[in-house]
Length: 312
Image (cartoon, rainbow, N blue to C red):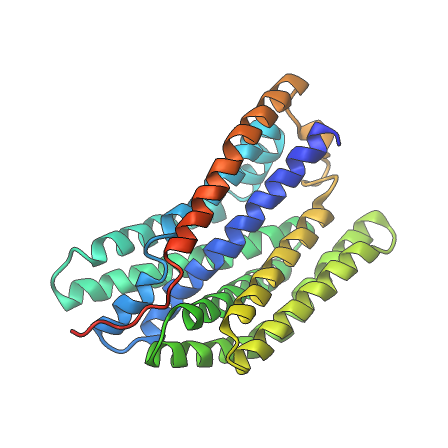
C-alpha cells in the first residue's frame, strides 16, 4: 500500500473514532437537561461521560494533526474554505469544556444552570457543524449542508440517548430510551436522504455508478434501524453497537467518496507531504498508536459499570 493511501486510511480511521466516541458525548451533553430531574440525576447523566470526554477529543486533535502533517494542502484548503464553521466548532468545544469543568465547582443552582446551558449548546454546535462541513464537501449549496448537519445532530442525539440507557439505571435510563425512540423518528428519514446523497454525489462526480458506496450507505441505514429496534427491546449494549456501527459506516462511505480528490481540483497525491515525511510519520504512528488505543480501551473498561443517581 502506498504511503498516501495508508495515511488517508489512517485519517479516515481517526475521524471515525472521533465521531463514534464524541458522538455520544455530544448526545449526552444535549440530552442531560431533558432526561434528568433534579441535581442527582443531572450528575448521574454527566458522570457517564465525565471520565472520557476529554480523551475522546484527542481523536479530533489527532485527525487534524495527521491531516496537517500528511496532507498539508488538504488541511489548508479545508480550514480556509470552512473557516467560520471550524471556528464555531472550536468555540462550542471550549464552551462545553468550561461547562463540564466548572459545573462541579460552583455552588449556586443558577450557576449550574448556566453550565448546563453551555454544555448543551457546546455539544449541539459541533454535532451540527461537522455534518454540515462534510456534506458541503460532497454537494454544493446550503440545502445539502443543512441536511448533513441535521442528520449529524440527530444521529448524535440517538447515539447519546442509547449510551445513556446503557450506562445509567432508574428514571434516567427510562427517559433516555424514550429519547432514543423519539430521535429515531427523525434520524431514520433524514438518514435515508443524507446517506443516499453520499453515493449519488460520488457517482455524479465520477460519471458512473458507485456500488461500494451504495453498499456502505445501505449497511449504515440497516445498522441505524437495528439500533432503534434493539433499543425498543431494551438491548442497550447491542443497540449502542448498532448506532456506533451506523456512524462508522457513514464515515467510511464519506471518506470513500472523498477518495482520491478530498477537495475540488485537489487530489490526494497533490496534497500529500514528501516521501520522507510520510515515512517518518508512519514509524511514529506504529510506535504511538497502539499505546493510545490500549490506554483508551483500559479507561472504558474501568468505567464500564452502570451509574445510579446519588441521594441529594
